[in-house]
Length: 324
Image (cartoon, rainbow, N blue to C red):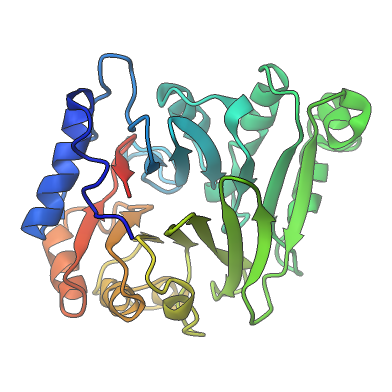
């Protein structure tokens, strides 16, 4: 496995983002800095290696000045994978300098609006871009509460959907660009490989999020790995094994340690995040989907996580980019 700092001292042009990360690893502290500024060419991430960028660090709240939950995986200077597409994600995608023609896939941890509302903007943008190849979209299958990923797309852009003028993009009538939905079993017990190409291999496990079908995704990039858990309560305790020895665990931080009631039944407490990170042996934890009820409690969250996990801990902010 490569050194945590292997990609962080190759270019002074990437200085701000990389130096923040280096200081974090050396000091072993939680960072709460503002979003890193782009270099002179407008790049937030490095042009070599694998990077995680935060497109949206908030949830569905409209009073937090943050986009909804969304992430990009960059490989050698190109945005190759979009994870979730909450409110405002499409604007952040543009600000990040990403190109729709570079995306290999879009994946969803769940299909509630806080994770999917900007999907239609990515589809519309893709058909107006230079993209000339299919765009696979992976997400959970449905149940009595939620539609499946294919049903969601049909309800959005099918012939009888909300935007029927885009219906051809579900078929080959559109020419080269096509949106192809893939339903992933969200109720099984074994990890499954869902997507593989020359850049990455994706695998999933179902996670427990009340009645909402939900998935955790492992993104394998050669000898490096990122795990995106989305929202879950770890009731089935599958994530530690799934995330074993990963370089980064990206997990929703939606409730404080003092949470009670329904919220606690759906989401992880910070102390649970720490236990999972320790059991999995991850190099760094990135706390995403930061809600109003968790901000201002950073010291409490750090203390709860550090009871078990003492590795690098990052509070996500808009457009920050972190190298593996």
